Length: 239
Image (cartoon, rainbow, N blue to C red; front, side, top):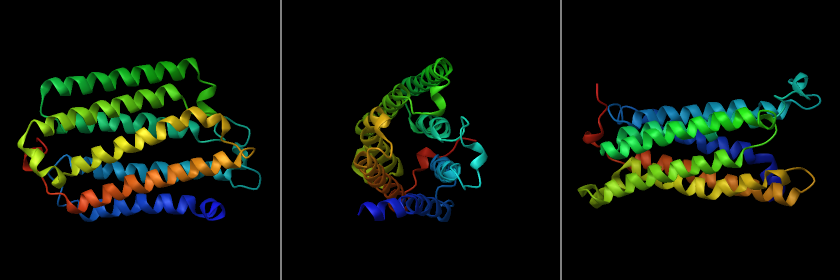
């Protein structure tokens, strides 16, 4: 199992990502006039970011990016922090700001996102050297709080409307459920990144397994949601 995971981790992870992206592309016409259109573009953004992040596998000796060895860009911590732990949070702030109806909730989401971005930039600025060698737990936790806030406001809005009777037909329900569970599972792992080295293979494989199954769950849920959901005319993109 451990050997299989080590050899196929990237293949499986990118496989479920691409599956969700291709499904979104095939169904783009279905969601053309809804906010879900932006979510499909976001999945492609994730595929690109993860594929580009693989460059770190080739910065060691004999890799075609060997010239990066020993430089701040040798590892991809900076890239993942920017594109996922910050970039993905800002996307969901944008997305939920579009799909929520309440002006009050929109303001809460908006200013939460602005505050998160400001704190993240400030924290990175004060810990710039660490930016290239590790993840920042504070950014991960704050990001998880923003996600939790977005999802809670969405669920409250659903419970207070007639949509609660057909929630399982909404793509936003599948998105909200999967990202909430993903962030709750993954966020605590950031605190243990100091143990992520070849000197502790037990933790390495445990972390790989958690990430792998969390990713499979999230992207499979995205895929299923894109297929089974009905478009909501009330969520049409405003021109």
